[in-house]
Length: 115
Picture (cartoon, rainbow, N blue to C red):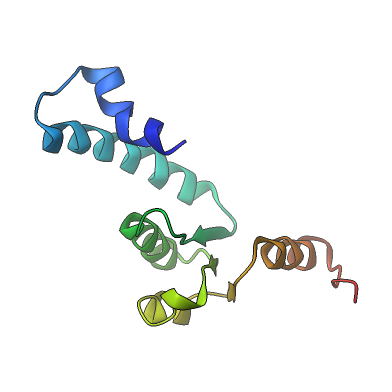
């Protein structure tokens, strides 16, 4: 849940009156979590949605690329220009979650989508 990501630092290390330090504590802890999960991943799915601009997702894609971990992106067409470099490094780009499921089915099991 997004709120957990925002609040994990203060929930564990104590409250902060200043929003910057509140967010900073969470960001530091999340960087450890995300970095650990990325290093364990065989493939990363990076989803960009409408609610948040998710600059952190672009950073995660960059980390995956730097670690040599293939990634797939999932986002609406209106993000195409902003994400052109992220998509250029991706092993595939999807518009719908079902396309990600089909890609994973093919990559893992060799199963083509049914017509």
